[in-house]
Every structure is written in structure tokens, then in C-alpha cells.
Image (cartoon, rainbow, N blue to C red; front, side):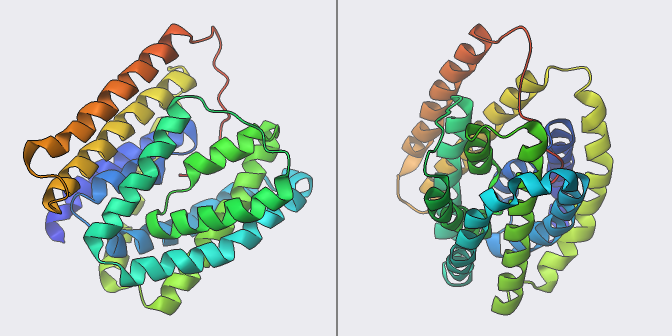
Length: 290
């Protein structure tokens, strides 16, 4: 694993800068790249243990808004429980290659949905919350990523910025804590994963402040959209490469996936810049919501 230290440092530093600038994106940038040389079983436990602390910080900073949102997020938190159990079982029993395939195939549409600016408020919030929580629980425990669907869900529901942060903090702390307990019970937290934590932590401590300063000089929505575009290309490359390795698509044809995603993302990126308003209005989130 020593050969992966420098690439992992570079990846997590870049992801931490993005997280410090936007308040989210650490896992969604780290996971697609790190899975090129690590497995979910090694990477996930390290990220989850780190995010328990980060998400606790998010909730503490936004604790004043907790009374406004806790009743609305309870159904999602309840739904997380069976979802986390299912996801942990998948990580425990599914071999690395199919698990990577599940990760890439799940993440890519979420990135493109956010890139397209999808917004559609949900009327039956409580009943939908249970189903949504279950899906997010599976997604997070398998990939450690839940930021994209949570951002779409919560921003659609008309929460104020402060309430949005508090709601996200509750959900993210619940999912990371539940997954940490489930991983511990399943025996997935091993020495390899624990050895990654000292490698990742310095990147967070250095990168987050840099990102916080960087965003003062760049339009937040533009920065977020460019990072999302990069993420789409990374996931598409990983998926194309994995399809070739698994012999699902033989030869160079596997990289047609990356070409297709590149064309779609290019069109979405062009549309974004063509319709960019004078003032950005992204929903800012505290560090730790990946």
C-alpha cells in the first residue's frame, strides 16, 4: 500500500480544497480516483471514520437550526438503517470488481443530474423520506457518497441555507455513524483501512482552509460546476476501464462510454455557461458533506 501514499495524498488534497471551497465534494472526488488503485473494502472504512468527525462538526456549527428540521429528517434517518445494513452486506460479500461497477454506475447519473440542474420538489415528504433514506443508506455504505442525492432532495424542499446545513448534518452524521457501527460489526474495519487515515487527515487539514480562501476569488457556482465536470470524466474513465477489465466490452470500444459522457457533459457545461446568471446562488454546505 506504500506505493499508493503519494497518489492518495494528491487526490485527497485536491478533494479537500474542493470541499473547503464548496462545503461538499470530498468523497465524490476522492472515491472515483482512489478506486483505480484501492478497493471499496479498504477505502470505505477510512473515509467513513473520518466523516463521523467531520459530520459531527457540521451539526455542531449549525445546531441552532436543528429544532427547525429534525422532524423533517427523522423519516430519512429511519430509512437509513435498513439501507446501511443492505449496503454493508454488499461490501462484505460482493467481490471488488462488481462492487466498483456498482459504484461507478450509481455515481455517474447522480453527477449528471446535478450538472443538468434538476429540481423537482417532493410533496409527500414523510413517506418519500423513508424510501429515500433507504436508498441513500445503501448508496453511502457501498460508496461513502451521498452528497449529490441529498443536495438535490434537500434543496428541492425549500429549506433555508441554515436549515439546509443542519438537515444535512443530521443525515450525514446518522449515515456515517450507522455505517461505522455496521462495518465494525461486519469486521470490515481492518489495519489497511486504519493506515489510510493518517495519510488522508493532513490533506483535509491543509486543503480545506486553502479551498475556503480560494472560493473568495472564484464564483462558487462556476467552481462547483467545473469540479463536477471533472468528476464526470473521472467516473466515465473508471467505468470504461473496468468494463474492459471485466470483459463486458472488449477492446477500445469500452472507452465509447467515456466519449459519450464527455459529449453529454460538454453540452451541459456549454448550457451552464450560456445561461449563467449575473450572481451565483448555490446552496453552501459545511465541510464533511461529500
